[in-house]
Length: 465
Image 1 (spheres, rainbow, N blue to C red):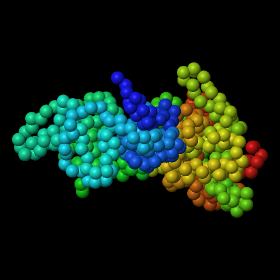
Image 2 (cartoon, helix red, strand yellow):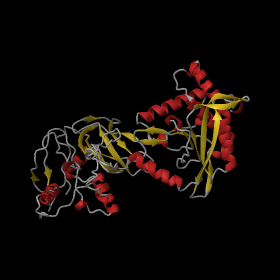
Image 3 (cartoon, rainbow, N blue to C red):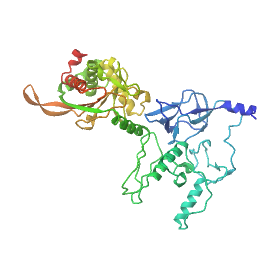
Image 4 (cartoon, one colour):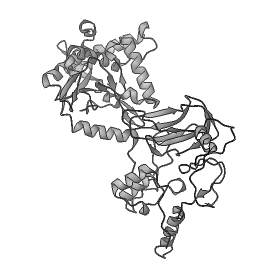
């Protein structure tokens, strides 16, 4: 029977679920909590940072109140739709907080360090030493596992313990099921004896004793850099998740779906480099980033304007070619979390100063790890500047859903025939990969030739635009 007190409690505590912050995302990893139980929050306040398959995103709470409970610790991967935080929206009303479902009497455990400790779902965060309720009809999994291991170490063989259900989050249970791993055989390393994804992967791919696996530190917003477990370790295994996992899958899908063709051209860009130097002194370009990539981006936009058929997408479901009358220009950016490709929306309409400002903002946001999923959605063509790493060129893989990607190599002084004489000139190699279902050899060649012609003679930006 529902009482008035039950009803008031239900209205008093509101829960915030993990949202789908991108297009069709199914899970996200909690990188950092910005609040703790007892903290006051307001509508729109950022409470945590999560990493999706596309980017790191800050999540704002949609109501006011006092944080009652954090349902997951940092480093946990949570399915979209799961409750991640509970908030008391009527603090001081005097009603009792909603309790977890009835369980056996608390069983004392060894004293834990004081301070806030991440714990299991539904048990909040304590300020002092913690106690965990025993599961109905079971004993705590951690002492059982520890006893079994200790027995092995003492040479007594397996220790007789009562069966208990291993502690693991739903996504981890699903992973174990997919990999055919019995969670009862997995040694937990998470807080409170929780089995983590890394534990499951370790059980699926055991490492020989002579090559110990490095153990990752607790997840933090910055990329994890695993340390060697012992001096002389021969291997380090790094779990693939978040942005890197999405990149890997996207590249596989692209490489084996779109028939790639790559063409190359080497071009004298001495005049472009002179133009860059002049623009840096131009008052109209004050306060914006001016570099060769700016001119290359403008050259590609002009080439697309002259050859609009290249700016398209393949609709497999409807067997149609979708011509795009706008250019969302992607710029591949190497970040600590992996390669991401944010894009400049409607780049075709931007003046050179506007394009420079957009490029500068895109690079700064990516470097700070603040690129949003929306900023990476809807790209049509991409530029990847591999020359910054000192390489001459490459054969880039298409960003999924796009028709072409231009790779720019290093710009170097090279001997070049100029006006009938061999002279040192600034030279680079361009590589254009395109989807051969959409772009035939003639069209791809025209686009690449136009970009090269503009970089050789930048005044064509005026005559061709």
